Length: 440
Ligand code: FAD
Ligand code: NAP
Image 1 (cartoon, rainbow, N blue to C red):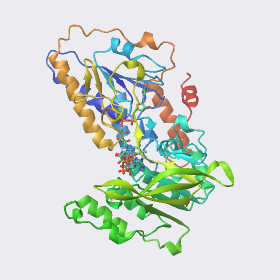
Image 2: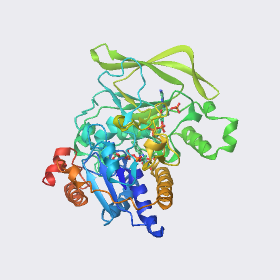
Image 3: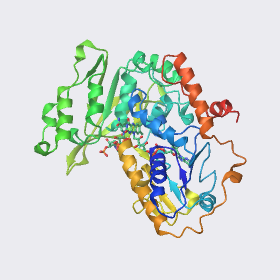
Image 4: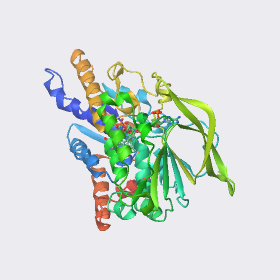
């Protein structure tokens, strides 16, 4: 079996198939080859999960065990599809191919001014502080006073928290040194987290909100308590808890602090406007004011303008099709249409590209298990006489691919560099740097 993508979806699909295949009587055991675009494995666990959430990254231990299995080979720095190994060639070498390549693009707002300097996608900012090779040179301008984050999901709170957290707290995490250095010079004092709907429609969760409310030295602008009440809360305990947390706010009084954040509701960005002092840089944002009708945001014909030095667009990630694959793709939902993970004979999907860019690692695990069970079901039902396939290695002869043992060496060096700085690891952020370390 080939797995495309080494995030949680890829690893959980692979481990479930390897674990459960031996119970299929009369079938040869299963071997998995995993292909990853980047030299380093683990997808968003390495490049998305916030550096101050180290406990979430513990799943990497289980994935590392998988990489040590004699039934598993890792091929990092190998792109499958457009500009890389064609998917059709891959399919000729395996009985089953699993597409678990995630959602590596952004949803955009589609409004004027989105390309001004000082407007960043949350994906690029998160990638930058987490050492993703594509965002090494982002160099976000943090020299203004105010930042606006559009969207009220957990990624928006990650961005706001990283902007407001004391750098001495971040220093002990695996955040990259260059990001620490830039954040230590940041002048951002105020972060607005802006939603197009109301408080009852926020997408973030209690644990993440509580963290924001307990950030040392960071105040929270109170929200009108009447907007936090609704008869529907009676039967919705998690939402009620969330509204209670907003109502309670932060223990740090606004009068005692220079840093604060606030939740703004019922505002849809209509235009990002240039600064009068610098025509290529953001200076303000104009919103359409909304009201809620059947839980949908509806413009009321009024606008409001807010000055800001930075805008982060945090309205979700998006998957793209492998255009040369000939496989179906649902452009509306940005997923590969599938039946419990099966796309067609011998080709499957799991994770964010299967079901869309929402859900935590645990939901991705259950989703991957569903796909694995479908693969095993098809395998059991099928005649396996035709399963002897050519090895993929000749096709990879011109690619500097990273193996499991190469990754161990990169991991060892990162930990060693981290330990010298009093942190878990210092990531090697460039592709060239990682490859050079293993002589490739
Ligand atoms: P990904 O993790 O994105 O993995 C996809 C992999 O495929 C990547 O490594 C990518 O490089 C690779 N790839 C892409 N294209 C190709 C190609 N053509 N060829 C080969 N490889 C390719 N969940 C939690 O439980 N706790 C958290 O704290 C948390 N924090 C998050 C923070 C952020 C900023 C984000 C965006 C998500 C967070 N999540 C968190 C959610 C969690 O990360 C996802 O549920 C999970 O990573 C989705 O897994 P996936 O394998 O589908 O995708
Ligand atoms: P998300 O949870 O889907 O939130 C997206 C936000 O963007 C919503 O508030 C949405 O509002 C808003 N939005 C979408 N389109 C918009 C538009 N055109 N204009 C204005 N606002 C718009 O996505 P996410 O924050 O990227 O998170 C992705 C997944 O990763 C989530 O499941 C999340 O829980 C998970 N994650 C978890 C953690 C954690 O566990 N700590 C951390 C980070 C991420 P509407 O509701 O109005 O559409």
